[in-house]
Image (spheres, rainbow, N blue to C red):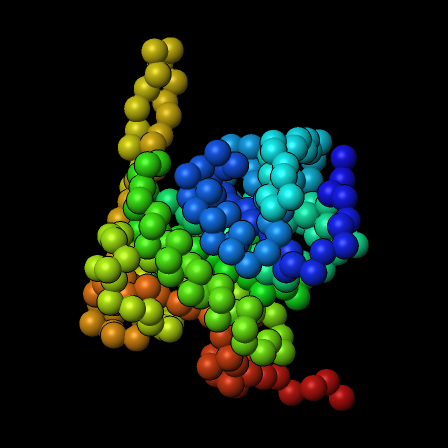
Length: 268
């Protein structure tokens, strides 16, 4: 089974997510994508939230075509979100030019440090590895039946801008949309990632056989609540946050200090 190449001048948009091929947010992402061209969807069979850049190495992977028409072709894949991107680029669409990757629309925020845990953003980052402009879309509503109207409206604006701008190197955007109707949103802010972290709490229980098990919970700690140039501030004040993401995690500011601390005289 392989996507059949067509002679088609329309743009080719790859859509995926981490909430699974049946998620309402995926349908919202497809709605955005189909306004710009042909759409191929390769999404996980089931929920894969929090998978980040995980890939499957020691288990077979299964692909099935869910639906197909001239505008949208949908596949469900048994792998992780990043597996979905790799399969699309390296197998299904290997001989075709993909113009854009859209990941989402995620049920819940991927602002601040969530970008490192998120399967949604893992997909967008992976897409940028292939030199393809990639947009991760998230809505600040975890409900399975969330209203994605604002995500569609602002997702279209961001995608249109990306497709029209000159891009000289891989582009990856982390886009988060506040909960509410489009008219209630104040606009778009291009901003930086907030410096905050999750502090987890594990709740211990016992099953009927006396075996202990744990449920993970936690709270986000914002270390700079008053900084007005961050994604957390933008979302808290009713703006869509757009953070350009890069993969280089080098702490350049610390390099001179480390060089001085670790410098040793060369042996003669």
